[in-house]
Length: 142
Image (cartoon, rainbow, N blue to C red):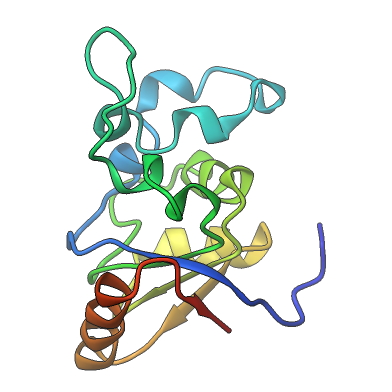
Protein backbone atom coordinates (compact mmCIF):
# COMPACT_ATOMS: atom_id res chain seq x y z
CA UNK A 1 0.00 0.00 0.00
CA UNK A 2 1.26 3.44 -0.91
CA UNK A 3 1.81 5.63 2.18
CA UNK A 4 -0.52 8.58 2.49
CA UNK A 5 1.39 11.80 2.99
CA UNK A 6 -0.24 14.52 0.90
CA UNK A 7 -2.76 14.49 -1.92
CA UNK A 8 -3.62 17.16 -4.46
CA UNK A 9 -6.15 15.97 -7.03
CA UNK A 10 -9.25 16.79 -9.03
CA UNK A 11 -12.27 16.45 -6.75
CA UNK A 12 -15.60 15.08 -7.96
CA UNK A 13 -18.74 16.30 -6.16
CA UNK A 14 -21.41 13.71 -5.35
CA UNK A 15 -24.51 15.37 -3.92
CA UNK A 16 -26.37 12.15 -3.13
CA UNK A 17 -26.59 11.29 0.58
CA UNK A 18 -26.50 7.72 1.89
CA UNK A 19 -24.44 6.18 -0.92
CA UNK A 20 -24.38 2.60 0.29
CA UNK A 21 -21.85 -0.12 -0.43
CA UNK A 22 -24.17 -1.81 -2.95
CA UNK A 23 -24.28 1.43 -4.94
CA UNK A 24 -20.49 1.67 -4.77
CA UNK A 25 -20.06 -1.91 -6.02
CA UNK A 26 -23.03 -4.20 -6.62
CA UNK A 27 -22.84 -7.51 -4.78
CA UNK A 28 -22.77 -9.58 -7.99
CA UNK A 29 -19.24 -8.36 -8.73
CA UNK A 30 -17.74 -9.28 -5.37
CA UNK A 31 -17.10 -12.87 -6.47
CA UNK A 32 -14.63 -11.67 -9.10
CA UNK A 33 -10.90 -11.63 -8.34
CA UNK A 34 -9.34 -8.26 -7.61
CA UNK A 35 -7.10 -8.72 -10.63
CA UNK A 36 -10.02 -8.03 -13.00
CA UNK A 37 -10.00 -4.42 -11.84
CA UNK A 38 -12.68 -3.46 -9.33
CA UNK A 39 -12.56 0.07 -10.81
CA UNK A 40 -14.65 -1.37 -13.65
CA UNK A 41 -17.51 -2.06 -11.23
CA UNK A 42 -17.44 1.23 -9.30
CA UNK A 43 -20.97 2.72 -9.29
CA UNK A 44 -21.77 0.17 -12.00
CA UNK A 45 -25.56 0.49 -11.87
CA UNK A 46 -25.29 4.29 -12.09
CA UNK A 47 -22.48 4.41 -14.66
CA UNK A 48 -23.86 1.90 -17.19
CA UNK A 49 -27.22 1.13 -18.75
CA UNK A 50 -28.77 -2.34 -19.05
CA UNK A 51 -26.74 -3.06 -22.20
CA UNK A 52 -23.46 -2.16 -20.46
CA UNK A 53 -23.03 1.16 -22.29
CA UNK A 54 -21.71 4.18 -20.44
CA UNK A 55 -24.28 6.70 -19.27
CA UNK A 56 -22.64 9.91 -20.51
CA UNK A 57 -24.33 12.06 -17.87
CA UNK A 58 -22.72 10.16 -14.97
CA UNK A 59 -20.13 12.43 -13.35
CA UNK A 60 -17.19 10.01 -13.63
CA UNK A 61 -17.72 9.74 -17.39
CA UNK A 62 -17.31 13.47 -17.89
CA UNK A 63 -14.12 15.46 -18.13
CA UNK A 64 -12.42 16.43 -15.90
CA UNK A 65 -13.80 13.93 -13.40
CA UNK A 66 -12.58 10.84 -15.24
CA UNK A 67 -9.30 11.31 -13.37
CA UNK A 68 -10.75 12.33 -10.00
CA UNK A 69 -8.58 11.48 -7.03
CA UNK A 70 -10.96 12.81 -4.38
CA UNK A 71 -14.70 12.39 -3.90
CA UNK A 72 -16.68 15.02 -1.99
CA UNK A 73 -19.98 13.45 -1.00
CA UNK A 74 -23.14 13.78 0.98
CA UNK A 75 -23.53 12.32 4.46
CA UNK A 76 -23.31 8.63 5.33
CA UNK A 77 -21.03 7.58 2.48
CA UNK A 78 -20.39 3.84 2.48
CA UNK A 79 -23.32 2.91 4.69
CA UNK A 80 -24.71 -0.59 4.44
CA UNK A 81 -22.85 -3.86 4.56
CA UNK A 82 -19.27 -4.46 5.59
CA UNK A 83 -18.10 -5.30 2.06
CA UNK A 84 -14.48 -4.37 1.72
CA UNK A 85 -14.87 -4.52 -2.06
CA UNK A 86 -16.58 -1.12 -1.91
CA UNK A 87 -13.29 0.38 -0.75
CA UNK A 88 -11.28 -1.68 -3.26
CA UNK A 89 -13.40 -0.28 -6.12
CA UNK A 90 -12.86 3.35 -5.06
CA UNK A 91 -9.11 2.88 -4.55
CA UNK A 92 -8.70 0.91 -7.78
CA UNK A 93 -10.41 3.79 -9.63
CA UNK A 94 -7.59 6.04 -8.36
CA UNK A 95 -9.34 7.85 -5.53
CA UNK A 96 -7.26 8.25 -2.38
CA UNK A 97 -9.61 10.39 -0.24
CA UNK A 98 -13.33 10.83 0.32
CA UNK A 99 -14.61 13.94 2.08
CA UNK A 100 -18.05 13.66 3.69
CA UNK A 101 -19.98 14.76 6.78
CA UNK A 102 -20.14 11.11 7.89
CA UNK A 103 -19.30 7.56 6.82
CA UNK A 104 -20.63 4.11 7.45
CA UNK A 105 -18.60 2.77 10.38
CA UNK A 106 -17.39 -0.35 8.58
CA UNK A 107 -16.57 1.62 5.44
CA UNK A 108 -14.39 4.07 7.36
CA UNK A 109 -12.55 1.24 9.09
CA UNK A 110 -12.00 -0.61 5.81
CA UNK A 111 -10.81 2.63 4.21
CA UNK A 112 -8.01 3.14 6.71
CA UNK A 113 -6.85 -0.43 6.18
CA UNK A 114 -6.73 -0.07 2.40
CA UNK A 115 -5.11 3.32 1.81
CA UNK A 116 -8.25 5.43 1.40
CA UNK A 117 -8.52 8.46 3.67
CA UNK A 118 -12.06 9.20 4.91
CA UNK A 119 -12.18 12.89 5.85
CA UNK A 120 -15.06 13.98 8.08
CA UNK A 121 -15.99 17.67 7.95
CA UNK A 122 -19.13 19.52 9.10
CA UNK A 123 -22.09 19.12 6.72
CA UNK A 124 -22.23 22.85 5.93
CA UNK A 125 -18.52 22.87 4.98
CA UNK A 126 -18.86 19.83 2.73
CA UNK A 127 -21.96 21.29 1.09
CA UNK A 128 -20.12 24.54 0.38
CA UNK A 129 -17.14 22.63 -1.00
CA UNK A 130 -19.42 20.68 -3.37
CA UNK A 131 -21.03 23.94 -4.52
CA UNK A 132 -17.58 25.36 -5.27
CA UNK A 133 -16.62 22.22 -7.19
CA UNK A 134 -19.80 22.42 -9.28
CA UNK A 135 -19.03 26.07 -10.03
CA UNK A 136 -15.45 25.28 -11.07
CA UNK A 137 -15.32 21.77 -12.60
CA UNK A 138 -11.86 20.27 -12.51
CA UNK A 139 -10.75 22.16 -9.44
CA UNK A 140 -8.04 20.46 -7.46
CA UNK A 141 -8.02 20.36 -3.71
CA UNK A 142 -5.29 19.32 -1.30
